[in-house]
Image (cartoon, rainbow, N blue to C red):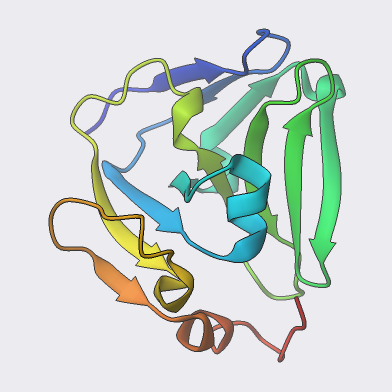
Length: 145
């Protein structure tokens, strides 16, 4: 069983606690994530019930597509998380891994939009990889970015 992990945005206006987090991180290489974060978006998947957020009044939501939203701190602009909004999809958080106070024991386990990964990016070790088409096929409809 994992201990809870805490984290916060750059200014501390948004603070969070994750109950029993996974030790597996993910990376998204889609163009939107790269523009939003300046690199691949490294995430920790957190079920909705396992995330406690303090300072929620500072969280802003940007509907980046017809099936997802991206959230950020309205004070410092820190990337917070990505969430699917498509009907029937779980409302899990894909939280920016860099928000966590302690990343010890975690490892990069999977990558999505691998066919969009720039040649300049290379991660150590094997990961489970999905192309854009494979990821989008998991959604209930054929969304447009």
